[in-house]
Image 1 (cartoon, helix red, strand yellow):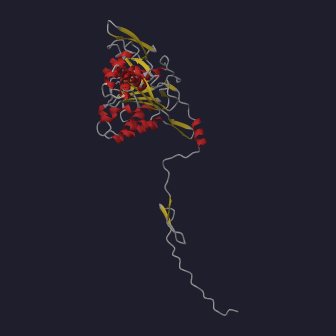
Image 2: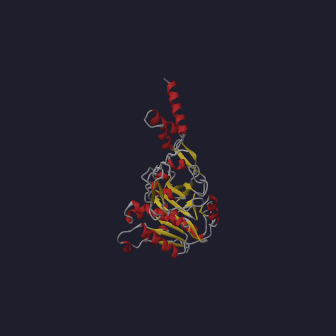
Image 3: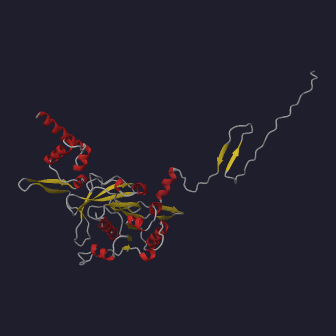
Length: 392
């Protein structure tokens, strides 16, 4: 038998660190054997709604399907931006659309799914007399609007002092609720930014709040929000012969993130009464009125306000001198037809020779100026250079 006494070693002392309770923001702990320090977050989600994809679909089923108010340009729900250059006719067109929605009478050839309903038009630009002029034939034979259409103008006496996005939204929401309207036009956001809101931060907040107003919400089977909000805006400084894009929208980086729909109006070189409307964004479906199918319109007084869809798909224009002229057929649905002066093949080749072959204009720049594809311009350039080479 081993008579040696067992030698008992005192176990090493263990240092127990303080463990905070759950009320503390972070719990720091150390493994009893020693090791890395970790962090367990107790942050609270106060921003997001978490659902399965299937549950989101089920929730959406209880919301009404947005109906068309002005073709695929404007729907019953969502934030829409309608922009264009100064004096391009934004207000005339927007007032026509508002009247159409209020009366339930669609424009010929432009689909409307909804019935007549209340519409509120916030007009921050026109004086009462300006509005009368635009609604009449030189102050005579005044147009009769639908009683469903209400026009709201700013009361400058009430706008003294600092104007915030919150004050504007409270007033807008109060008006549409009082009028029991689900469609509102704001003409225009640029006026509010320049004359009311003091900072770009406030302007961005206003756009966000308008976006929130346009989003339908379900709370205990009760649906709120879901307004059709149509906001008029200006373009950046651009040449009228340039195609309309989202980048043409002033403040596009801050604004475009909130949009369901976006449309633009632009001048046409075909005549002072011509304009065209182009669809730039449509989250509700396919692009219907893009660069190859713009909506050509005519501005003119005839007691039906000042906006009409062009009745013809094509237009014949005369080109050349009095002694040597010819008629050309122009496709009004092509954006390029409205952006550049009409050219014959001879005109185009002379332009390419002068500006591309002999000048310093690039093929793409020439294509943008003439409205033709860069492939066509390159073909003209190659043809001219080949003939010049043969003549050497």
